[in-house]
Length: 197
Image (cartoon, rainbow, N blue to C red):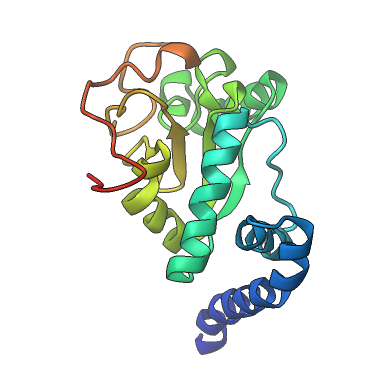
C-alpha cells in the first residue's frame, strides 16, 4: 500500500528534477521561453502517451502555459489523458458507453455523441492526475480553461470569451453543438495580470 502511494510522488519528483536538468538546453533552444520548453519536455517524458495534436491552437497555448505555471510555481504536474478526438473515435466511445449502460440517455451522462462533444472541436481536455486537475480547477480561469461537469473532475474546456455554466453532467442541457456550448454567462473574465477571480 505504501509503495502504491509513494510511486506517483516519486515519479512527480523525478519529473520536476528532469525539468530543472533540462533548463540549460531549453534556454539555448528557446531563449526567453526556456522554462516553458523544459516543462513541456519533462512532462512529455512523464506522460509519453499524451497527444496535443488536434487541439485548437489557442487551446494548446493556454494548456501548455497553464501547466508550465503549475510545474514551476507550485511543483504540480498536469498531464493530458485525452484532447482532440476525431468524430469516428468519439462515435466509438459513445457507442461503447451506450452498450455498457444499455441506453443512449445513460450513455449521455458520461459521453456525448460526436456532434455535441467539445473534444471533436479540439477545445476539450481530459487531464490527470487528480491533483493536477484540482490545480487547473483553481487556476485555469486565468487561461480560459474551465472544469465543465461535476461528475468529471478531469474534463476541462476552453472558453475564450465567456465563463461557462458548471453542469452536473454532460446530458443536463438540451442537445447542442460544440460551437454553442460556451453560451453560459457574462461573468467578467479573470485577468492574466492582476487580480484573479
